[in-house]
Amino acid sequence: MNINGVIVGLVTFAIIGFFHPLVIKAEYYLGRISLWVFLVSGLLSIALSLTVNNFTFSSVLGVLGFTCLWSIKEVIDQEKRVKEGRYPKNPKRKY
Image (cartoon, one colour):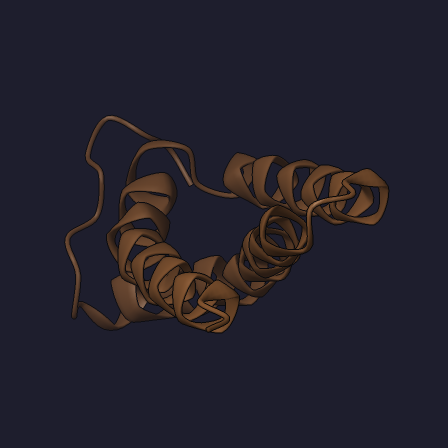
């Protein structure tokens, strides 16, 4: 029996669940700087996924990398949601 697919699926589910509040917090505390953090993290994870020999770990790194890249779009969308008043604005950070 091959359990690799189930492991990758569960880890993918966990990564996506973790990144939802992470994007909200990143926009709140870091603002646009978080775009660079997600970009570098995503590209690094994807590059590492190409070098790892273990299929499961390589897949998880790929999922993590592309989730980081997707988070760039989500941070931009989160900024719009903050401007619309659907999420709180950080009063200590200047836009």
